[in-house]
Length: 508
Image (cartoon, rainbow, N blue to C red; front, top):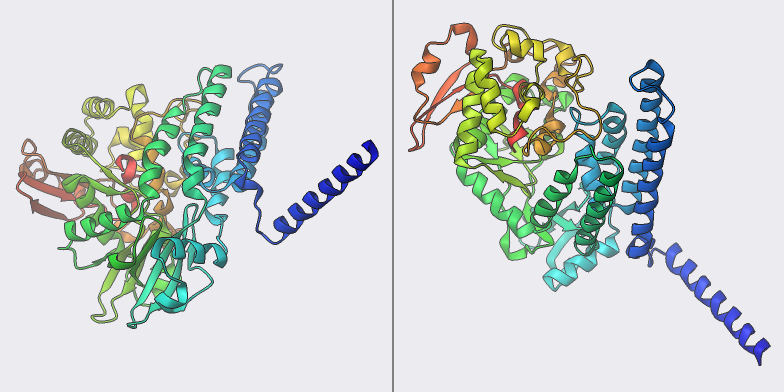
C-alpha cells in the first residue's frame, strides 16, 4: 500500500512538473504572476545590496582614496542588482527604476547610468494579451473593431504599449493598451517597496527615499487610468489652444476605457532627432523657442504641467495641410497641478536668479522646500553650475561642461546615496530629463544660437511683480519677451529657448 501511494505521488509530481514546464514554455504561465516569486526576488536583492554596503566598506577609512574607489565598485554592483530586479519583476518596478535612473543630481553616477537602460527594456505584451485586454474592456474582438491592427507595437513602456490601427470608417488611430497584469500587481508592488525601504532605513538611518514610494503610491493609480489621461489631453489642448504650433492628438471616447485609449494617429520625429529635422527642413531653434513658450505657459501661467516630456513623448513634424512646424505632445497620463502659492514662489525665485539676488534665491528655494540644499536645487533648476549662479546666470555664457548632469565638479554639492531629496518637488525633475540637453544634442556638440544666451526664461504672473521689473533689465538679459493677460494681472516671459527646459520641470 505504501509503495503504491509512493508510486502515485511520484507520477502525480511528474505530471504536475511536466504541465508546469509545458505551460511555462508556451507562455501560458509566468512566474511573475506568483506573488511569492516577486516578493522573494525583491527581498533577496535588497538583502544582497544591504549586506554589500555593510561589509565591503567597514574596514576602509572613510573618505580615503581607497574608500572612494571601493564605494564606486559597491555602487556599481548594487545598481546592476537593482536593474536586474526591475527587469525581472517588470511593471511598477521598471517604472520606479526609470525614475531612479533620471535622478542625476541625487544618486551616484553608477546608479543613474546603469538604470537608464530601463527606458529601452520595457516589457512587451503578446498579441494574445492585447486581444484579451481589448476583448474584456471593449467587448469585441480586434477584427470587429478595426480594418487593420499592427501586431508590432509602435512603442512599449513600463505600463502599456501603443499599436497603429485603422477603424472601419477609415480613420487611422493609435491604440494604447495597458499590460494586463500591471493593474493587479501595482498596489502589491508599492506595498512591497514601502516595506523594503523602511527595512533599509533601519540599517541605514540616513536613507531617506520614502518620498519616492509615496509619490508612486499617489501617481500610479492616475497613470493606470487611461480615461484620466484622455481628460488631461483635452484639458491641455484647450489650455494652450492659442499656440498654433502645438498638436495634441484627439481622443476617441467611444472606444476608450481605463485600460484602452484610442486616439488620433499623428506621425513625426522625436524632438532630439536631428537627422529627421534636417531631412524635413525643420529649424532647431524654432522648436526650442516653441518648447520654451509651451512650458512657460504650463508652469508660470496655468500651473498645470506635463510630467513626462522625454523625446518619445514630444514629436516634431510639418503639418500635412499647412506645412507649418508643429510640436506633437503625447502621453498625458500624469500632470502636476501647482498651487497658487507654489507657482508665485517659483516666479519670484526665477526673478531672484535673473537679478543674482542670492538672499532671495535662498529664501524662495527654501520656501519651495529645498532647505539647506538650496544651492543644489538652483543648479538643478537652471542647468548651471553653482559658480555660474553666483556670478549671475545672465552674465556668464553656458559651457558644455555645465550640460553634464552630475555635479562631481562641484565639491560638496552633490549628495551621496541616501541623502534626503532636497525638496518635495525634486523627485519629478527627471520627468524632463528625457529632453535634457536635447537642443545641445541636436547641435551635435555646438550650442545653437538661441542657447548661447544665459538662463533667463521666467514668466511672472503675479500682480506684485510688474512688467517694469523686466523693462529695466539690460538688453543682454533678454532673449525675447511676450506678455500674457490671463485675468490674474500682467505676466512677462524672458525667453531662453531650449536649455533652461532641461531642468524646468523640477516643479512638475
